[in-house]
Length: 339
Image 1 (spheres, rainbow, N blue to C red):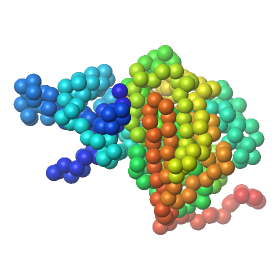
Image 2 (image 1 turned 30 degrees about the vertical axis):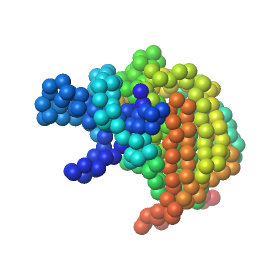
Image 3 (image 1 turned 120 degrees about the vertical axis):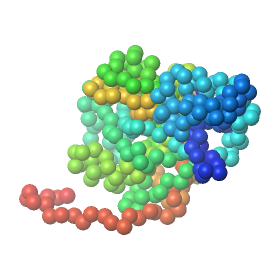
Image 4 (image 1 turned 90 degrees about the vertical axis):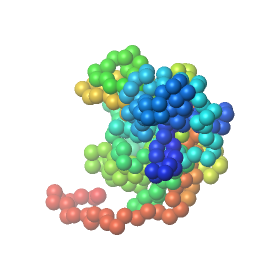
């Protein structure tokens, strides 16, 4: 099943609605509306049908996933019973991020991307620790963007880049899991665009505290989630990047150091996975502009495609968005420095 989030206008203002996506029929199905209609046909009162629909299909995808199998059971039932009465043309909806993740963790697990990245920045070889334990950082959930939403081009950067990744969506709570247990806790896949300010990334990473403003200005998530029952061999997944309609690269999700199940299991050690958490697979080989000597400009339209999922499209703002303040450097108190 393919599941997404859209914004719908109502007398009470815009509301976020969960939808089942049927690309082959060029439509989405408003799940709460379909469920309400079906229950009313089954003799439920309007008030009771509304309460049930709101319980199964809240505005939060993470909250819906937290209901466990009951969520998908209700979604399939609603589509079977009343899809035609609650459908909207797929080309006319306003998308939101496919999931509202409690936590974003972004991995680094494709060796070819690591090698090509380090060759471009002159940073030597990838860190051997990445082959001992999975590496990841945590990103801001306050700057997530859905399909066709405009992404502000950060005014503090002159080298904005995209990163084509597979977003692993966690299906339930879990701590100290084995990979087999973690595999059962993988709800589905989406497309994750880990936008990056490359000219800010180097100095920030040199601080030894992980990425900050080089990452936390935009994360693209969408267009929707494909549940794992529709996903075949993970290594056979293919991807491509188009900018302004021109194909820049193609790739394949093969050669991961750690499998998706192992990534989830590692994250769960001493920590708690939560329904709706997003874990980035790491950038696929040739999945960033840096690797192929390309950079984004204001106004560019970026399309990331993953087989079995779809296409995530975002336009960068035509003008850079400049903050009213940026910190002034302070005097370095520890002697001479070349920085």
